[in-house]
Length: 205
DNA sequence: AGCGGGATAGTCT
DNA sequence: GACTATCCCGCTG
Image (cartoon, rainbow, N blue to C red):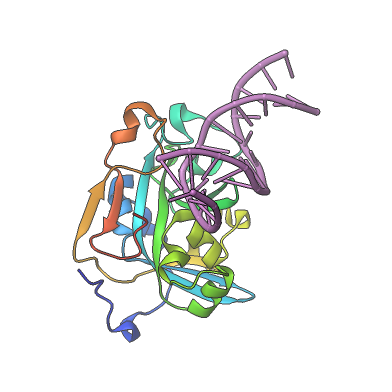
């Protein structure tokens, strides 16, 4: 039920090693739950625990930008090594993914929700108008805004400052279900490739 | 539940 | 250079 991080002082913020990403995309989607995502900017540092992810597994996944091995300027980073940042813009929002899978395999994990940890006043400021902490990071477009993640982070190694992952907590229980917002993706619509920390109140829905 | 915002990239002519 | 679709959000009813 509760994330196992009541003793917040026990968290050591330190970039995880690059080898962490050497696992299948579905495994990584689950392993990222509970990790701390940290972003340092000149305004200050913010961080939050990942509580919701989605897997996008290239060429056979109609919901993925890299479906059919579509290799363009935008998707290029997905064909590279695991552990790099894939950002893209949708309407007014920037979304952040972690590249996964082997070289030449265009796969990624979308980070859909965070539980705010440090730098909460800065998050609140960036999410101007939002008084409820839940609304700062409970969606993929919201969390990038709160964290100050932009297209400038495209291609950045997510195991090095100023944008990196750190060990956080181990989820007590993980739930799994259909992905969100891909109603037009044929059979891929129903793949159960969304994962979240069971019962966490920052999960998008 | 519906809709418009306003930013790309990709696909065409 | 235009047209179109989009891994969303916040607001209106």
